[in-house]
Length: 203
Image 1 (cartoon, helix red, strand yellow):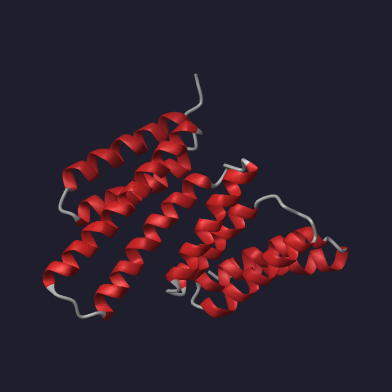
Image 2 (cartoon, helix red, strand yellow):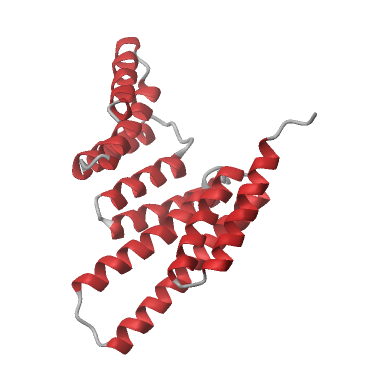
């Protein structure tokens, strides 16, 4: 997937050539996310952080929660889950403060995903007693499930079918892991059917 990095590189060159400072930082954000998603976690995160800081310093405030969500995804790809969760907490607060709710459903979904990934990492690294480990896992799973369910609720309120499907897929995957495959299958079927209906033009 060379295009994943080549496209933002081209955009960076064009923005630099024509002096488009705001779009230049947006291109750097995309490039940082692309780097992290392809295994260059540290480089991607640094580029994202610098671009977000520069964009804010320029006075451009739009898409701040969305950009923080991109940073969280990069942190997730680099297994830096605490940093990712911190970025999402800030994204939620900014979205609420400025009533910028466009990306908020996916922010909740990402929180659930990062919680589960952090749980998996810690379960592999720590030696805990069976009861303690079970109680910790149950708590994290419940919190993640709540994040997915809230993401679905918000997406439905906004008629954001793509975000709804993403969150439903995350929840269904979690339910399947909890041996509730029938519920997961039904949930996915309903969500995908609804998406197909929404995308079908009237005759």
